[in-house]
Image (cartoon, rainbow, N blue to C red; front, side):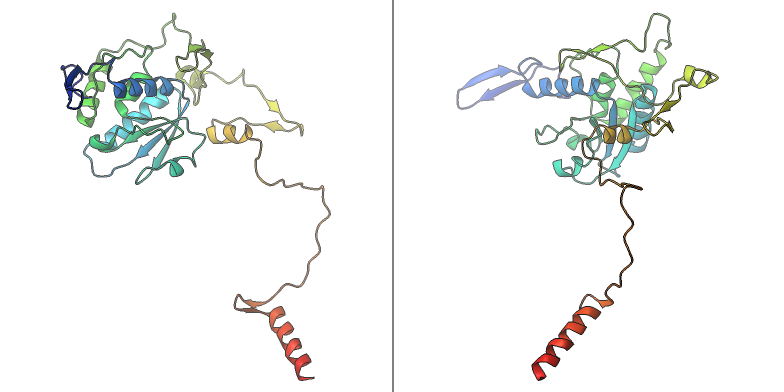
Length: 266
């Protein structure tokens, strides 16, 4: 994958035929590009820290957070050991994961995971205005950081008048237009005086404050949100004398055993 510009031939000894592994014939590269398209549709990202011993992993995490924050994406940082589908299934509000790990173990191509897991280089492609990919693939942190510095040096100023940040984008995975969610505040929103702020009231006629919480928004969309409190709807329960002692033998159990022994003696 990292030598995609070079011609690579594969030979099958069973059929005795050779095949040129290009971007069209290599299914793995096509699956990685599909992961990039799914990452373009994601609004909530999770940074998976899968290593603490690889060089430049801290600058890479900082750079990923800056990229996602600049793009007004919600970011969570999750420290994990060995990846498995059950562990990542606990974070259902996260729509895409970015794995920061050893380059030899960064490409996760398993269908058992519910959410796509991409590399930092694939995140760069997903956050671009147009996901144009020439087939070049980088896994080394030093090369990815060096390329990002070169891109920032030749980057055009953002916030031009021709760009509409609220326009819908076309999703290649669903084939429809989607409206991206904006988490955090941009520079223009920070400089505003707040006179256009809306006060939303809920069903209890109290002011409801909307915060940039992807987990809270995910909870509001669930059918089951936990046990109901039912404050003021049920009569309060009366206090009763409970059991005393330890798990080996409570007070009531001792009393009952004494009664049984007493009845046997009689």
